[in-house]
Image 1 (tube, rainbow, N blue to C red):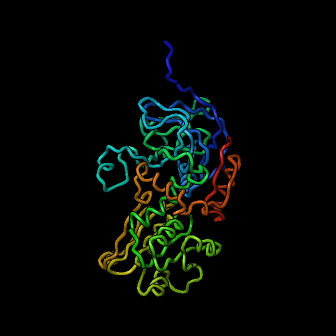
Image 2 (spheres, rainbow, N blue to C red):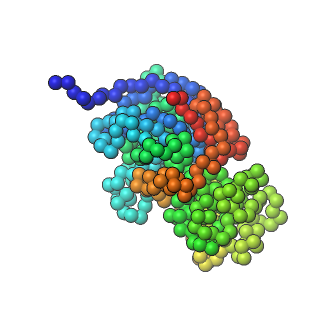
Image 3 (cartoon, helix red, strand yellow):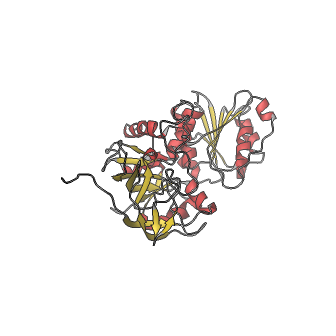
Length: 378
């Protein structure tokens, strides 16, 4: 009797491989293993470059490596035990997964899965091995996604099925940056109507916070950035006022206090500079001021703040992926996008071919883009 069960084989494909910190990515032919139990192999359709990709590429000591985590694709094959996906499903990749079984997933209090949380070592969650190799030598993953490859393997808990009607070269942004900012505004800060908001860093995440604040009815949304070119562009996302620290003649917190009658109701650190966390804390008001930190630290991970900032009633909250439970909540954001209730397309400043991926890194480092979408060969 013939069997209908398919047994996936190793695939050879192109991938943009980083061989060392800060070195240009090199197009290589890599071997991609079949998905193991509870894993799926995805044909990547579109992937966008996130600032955390660039930071990790500069600082990581784990190489060779395939970066990329903000992506959409189509399931090519499934491993043993996978029941929620089948070949042909459209999916978004997730840099932090959701097992739906661990203490955190079932708590109703956290979106940080203890089984499929942030993977920093460059290997798969399940067996601490890689699924990529070049001439038999391992090539490491990034955030258990590695979307800068024509094909990738992820745990089934690190992908979410989406409607095939959604444009994949747009919704890939929802698998990290845009969702992170919206969630910080809605889930973490829970911005109130009529409030004042200050946002430090007007990249994709910061502008997504602005969009979330606007949709919540914030009366003033102050954007802080040293790049004056972002001023006009930021208005489209809800920024009502722009402050360039290089033009200020007083300490930045004092400038914010002066224009907000004592400090903002909410402040958001979206840069990844822990010194700015202190500035953000100092810029929100006594009594109820809330500071949310979203940026991934690029250098010094420690935060320094005077205890009086907390005694006076200020609160500092961390945020990862905007508090969204990724598999549970992302389909809702895709639906909101399709209903034109949230902006996504407007964050895309460049569309590049896979062969031009290094240009995306250049644009990001030079501050000349919000999101570059990289289109994989068809």
